[in-house]
Length: 274
Image 1 (cartoon, rainbow, N blue to C red):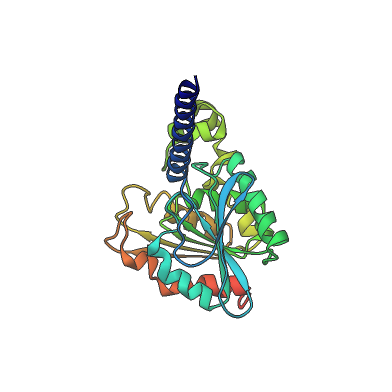
Image 2 (tube, rainbow, N blue to C red):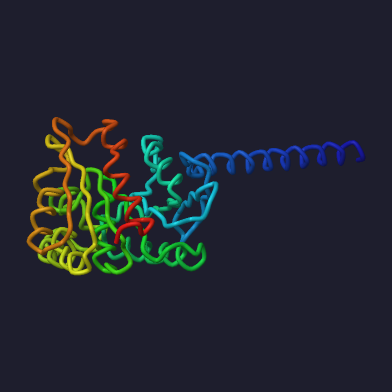
């Protein structure tokens, strides 16, 4: 009897160990599936309204303002932004962003941005007027939120930014983010499409700096930055468009090592030029 009990105890212990190992392995797999964001510079990664956010502060000196980077999707910001970020930090600008998912400037995405703005300005005590740095489809997010809160934005800089939903990702793909079917979204473009919502920004004199390649086949220069420039001028808003000759929607270093763009962000972000 004693020998039998010993065997049962050993089996029970073995199963417990296997269960424990299995749970540990499940935890490892879960962690691998949802890794912590890797930033190009030391910073903090945290949650805002259930969405992953980050903040990089200058290591020395006081914070003079901040840059709102978008889209903060997995893998972004990336090492290609390092040249710019280094200069922003040296000028006293913090850099932050929140992953609103593939929201395409939708009301859901804007609510995540509302929560992030509150976090940055209230809890983190940063400036109430950040400068957006919008890369690619981050342009939809930045323009959409900024058009609702123009007095809270010191400027918007864009690197081949998407500005027109019909250009990218297209009505069919964008519609689910708006909880609409494609025909319904098409009928409501004047309400939702960022390129149709520039008037509040122009009235608030929010400056724009756009950098775009002239052979971009994914995010057309003509339908996005080019059209924004045309409409913004008609609305008497301040806008500058720099065209990268012979460049498309790519990782050309000139997009990420553009001194005029960096100078624009620093001037507006630090309040050196209103």
